[in-house]
Structures are given as C-alpha cells and as structure tokens.
Length: 193
Image (cartoon, rainbow, N blue to C red):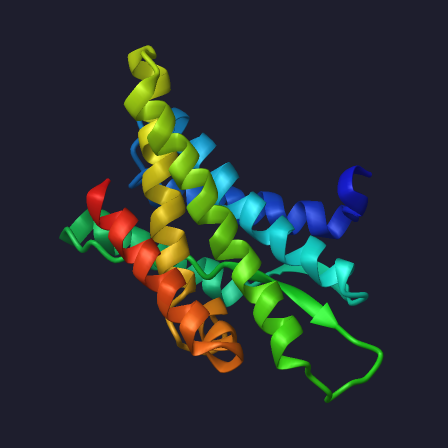
C-alpha cells in the first residue's frame, strides 16, 4: 500500500475527504471540481505530514476519522447553506500517535508532529499563490489553484488555534514562539486570498 496506509485508514481518509469537499464547496455541485484539489492538498497532505513525522520519530501513527466531527462538519455546512453562516468546522479526524511508553509525552516531538500539518498547508498554499501570480492558466486551473490556496491557509489557521486537541495547542505547549509565527503567517495569508 502507498505510504503503508491500511484499508481502514484509507477508508477513514476517503470519508473525511468527501465530507470536507461537500462542506467547503457549500454543497454546490459546480464548485466541487475546483475544491477537490484544495481539499486533497489541504487535508490529505496535512494528515500524511503528521503521520510521517510521527513515524520518523519512531511512533506508531494512523489516521482515524472522528464520526462526531464528521456529523458536526455536515451540520455546520448545512446551516451555512441554509442560514448564511460562514463558519466551517473541519475537525473530522486526526492522526493518532502511539508510543511504547504510554502516558509519557515528549512535548518537543509532539510539537514537531503537530506543526508538520499546518506547515504543509502553508507551503502548499504559497505554491498555489505563486502559480496564480506568475503563471498564465485557464479559468478552471485558476479556480482550482485559488481554492487550493484558500483552503490550505484556512485549515492551517484553524488547526493552529490553541484549543485542545487542535495542533495549535500542542505547538504552543512546545514552543510559544514557533506557534506565534505559524499562526500569524497563516492568519495573514488566509486574509489576503
């Protein structure tokens, strides 16, 4: 399997991916083709980054969907559509990290694992912005790159909020300076798209 993904992990990623695509497209069929690239790079790359960094440090790591989060994301998405709200709930699952030493946590390692996802989002979003700015592309590709930048920056900012169990909480506990720089950059970039 690619990257050592197990069947259940692929299923959980696929369900989460579909739900986020529906929510970020505002349940608009015409927007789904443009949003797909953004969700794939923002969500799947984000989770794979956490997983691979955790494994680099010797942890067992696997993505698991969170069914309550999936229901909340869908409910908020439907309320957005019906009532014009603008809040997207995107916590539909997470990479769970396991250690042989249950109960012991290395704040630095967990901070690095946590910042890997938002850092990936920021990098992908910047690449999309650069392509939008300097490469002449068709409208379809332009819209796809626009949503890729927007979704990556929004997910980076959302995930860096210092609220447990989001990434920002773990990064802040590890290194407040890195957290401040990361959330500041994510906020700035999501504001300019």
